[in-house]
Length: 248
Ligand SMILES: [Zn+2]
Ligand SMILES: [Zn+2]
Image (cartoon, rainbow, N blue to C red; front, side):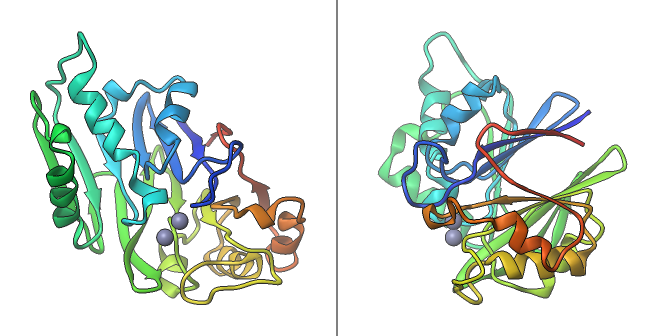
């Protein structure tokens, strides 16, 4: 069984309905976490996902709305009374990620694992078991998009990205494309983020079967984002909501 749970569909703007970015993909009860932005650790608890059983976390990039809950996650893993983690934990990120985690641990020494092995790994264009990573355009940032393949299905998560061929390629024929949609069609920030027209073009070019919009800024509220995407793309489009579950 493949199930997607949206942990956070918002951005850096604090929002009670939309936490910062995070997606959980359950593959036969194993949670694969993609991004852990502010508020998503608690969304994980709301969704019934046990943080003690998370073994793999894939971070798209180092903007805080995509990774800041790594701090309470690692801290809580060390200091939950009665819990001693032994299982190895792997955290993946883009180029520069190892140095970033090292600096984080210099500021917060309490996040350094006490009882379990932690692997921090930087990814380029490569595959880790069922998960493929590819570097994508996000202003001057090192950023990754991910594709998980299991049970003959493919789920793609864009993270933050501007319009680029690498994102179209990794999303090719995806059964589900979870894609950032920072702006309505009237606004844009080329090479950094996507608006609804960009999302429509990427969804069409990649031939994705189904699209979920995420990373929604507050000024996206009340706008017919789905209608705007569907001017270009003829597949199924939905606006993501925190804690939404999609079985693939
Ligand atoms: Zn972001
Ligand atoms: Zn970003």
